[in-house]
Amino acid sequence: MAFASPSAAQQPPGPVQTAPDVQGPVTPETAPAAIPKPKVVAKPAPPPEIKISQDPRPSFHPESAAMIAQASRAYAAIAERGGWVPVPDGPALKPGQEGAAIPFVRARLAAEGEPLADLAGQRLDADLTAAVRRFQQRYGLPETGIVGPATVKAMNVPAADRAKALGYSAERLASSTFAFGDRYVAVNIPSAAVEAIEFNAVARRYVAVVGDPAHPSPVVEARIGAINLNPTWTVPVSIVKNEIIPKMRKDPGYLAKSKIRMFGASGQEIDPARIDWSTERAVNYTLRQDSGTANALGQIRIAMPNRHAVYMHDTPSKRFFGQDFRFLSHGCVRVAGVTDLAAWLAEPYGFGKAAIEAGIAGGERRDIALPKPVPVAWVYLTGFVTADGAIHFRNDVYGLDKPDPLDELVTATIAQPVR
Image 1 (cartoon, rainbow, N blue to C red):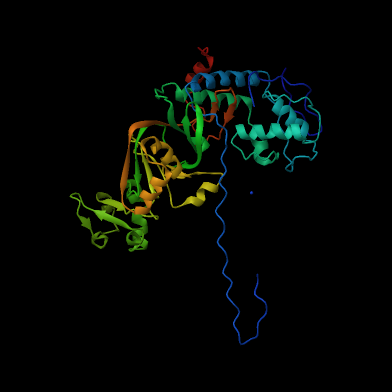
Image 2 (tube, one colour):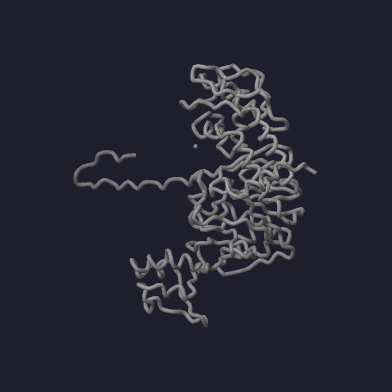
């Protein structure tokens, strides 16, 4: 049946048609005038809490392309039946509270297959709260059970748009030749998360910071061949041109403060004072930042040779891991807990976490080669399906799902039968 958009005074429709196979944070006392008051030093703020899903199901697996295409057809069918009723805006609703919007929430969740027996109740009861948390988990939202603005916004994206997101995601995987193995690493860029997968289950999942919209992280399929401890950082030409030169014009001591040295074509070190920073001559030199805690790559770089020259690494700017919006890098992927990821990669070859930490503490540049390289894929999936059939969505931060000439290909992908 077709869904009609109700007015604020209307109740949502009765039983809704559901999609098959869709799961679902001491002032000092007064002292005599002759005795100075002790200075109060503010304690540093604690680091932001890093939250990451503990779901053991990989977001990228060998059946991803086929299952995503099938899910796209299921959401297209929901759209053809009229989609779902929008949830009205209003104050956030916490578990146990009542509100006129609750029946709309129930109808919306039921439209994706949530088995809710009561579609008319106006209380955010335990059963509905659990369903809201499942929705939030699938849509990459904090799993609070609170129906707030971000949750309502996600609920109100039309079914047709969700079908398209899944279709585009399937299309982006159509040409993949990724060599899945017993152990591999997957980065779903829209999720800003890294998964270390072992025997078809997520052994480790890490919060990540990925490329910003102006410097997007690319789709990559590569192999991790080494772990670099205490790495140096060779500054890309684009950063020299757009960031280093303007900073040197304002502060000639910037390179020295940042422990960045300049080298000529034959490897000789160049005094930055010899460079005319009013020009762009500096792009003809190699700028390299010394190892150390201030290094832009932090203390670990995970080498994965590829034509885009991107990789995963540590960072001195760990505060960004605590943000919900983590699209902030120049294209590489910064990993929270990268020491743990490095240990997972190297442990089969005798380098556990303690050995890696000892290597870092030594302060010397060192490489740990992996005799058997580990496959790694960076994918861009705004819609994905885990192996158990649960369908997930993420925001299209890079705007790759907007209508363009690919529409015909996406339509064709959706129409193809699943083999």
